[in-house]
Length: 116
Length: 112
Image (cartoon, rainbow over all chains, first blue to last red):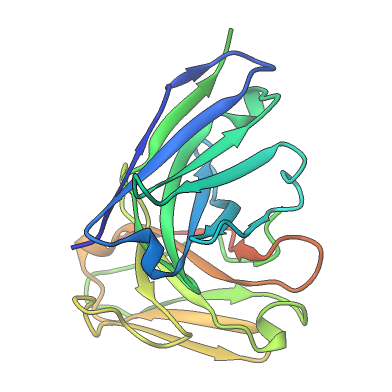
């Protein structure tokens, strides 16, 4: 079955860039669908960050757009998130998911803490 | 910043029926965009519960049902069970400048 797994540093310093990768298994990204990133600050709700198609076309949450870059590597069946100039407000669990209108398959999530 | 409003909490005894509302506006639910619902058990990733307003993915019990009307949507849980204690989120698409995909504020369901 289709599975997604996030990976990346769990601790990032303020003002630096947060980088995460989502590895997809059981399905080829090149076959279609959009793929997205969602985050959840501790004790709070869900926030959509952005999404990417296998062709590389992207769209981002306007509130984060100036700091977000999402890219795809179809050869590795992965897509990645970069969030620049992070602050403590970016501390959250970051999820990757497949987008079919709804987010139908999710990774387990990875906690990223922004702290010096 | 959520544009979809849910009650913070609802509760019910085992076997009862509870409903969760999701109130939006003319730029999201009211514009005809689909509403989806997610269940998030403590310490786990959200799980798709209802898609396309009222459809259940394979494996989701028929105790869960969704509906949509006007600028709002609802999730109903009938025959409430202890294992249903979780956070529930609605989600839709928004055509304004807020965001393309928007989530509700979330509702904690407590089984008494």
